[in-house]
Length: 145
Image (cartoon, rainbow, N blue to C red; front, side, top):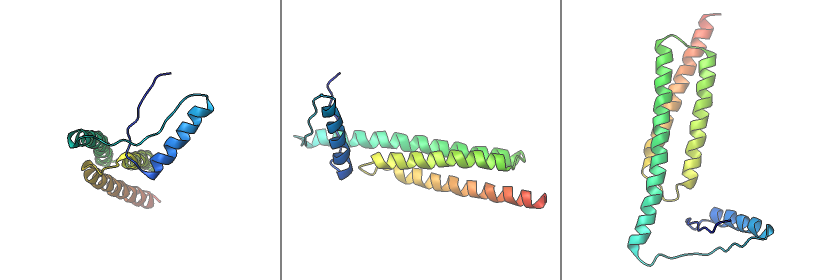
């Protein structure tokens, strides 16, 4: 095994999970120590905080791009007249994955990265577009009856 250090913000959830991890390591006769650190200068602290934000912003940006692709796909199938329950179902599944991904990112977003606002807005927009497509599907189905 290798040695390692993990740097996380001090939250109740992190403390509980790290304590559980420590206990598991000890059960397997390993060694583990938990501690609390303080930065000796503001520059180092800011560097770490900026890195946390950069990483979350990258994740939010990727999520936003995936939401754009979902909406683009819905627009294309609508233009082609492919209005069907199958398409709706597939896109609902994809949207739920995006929503779940957003929730996972926000769980790690300890410092409220700026990208969260844009990601939330585009996720909401994707939900609205999907809802609109769903309405189109039901209207088409109703007209075919």
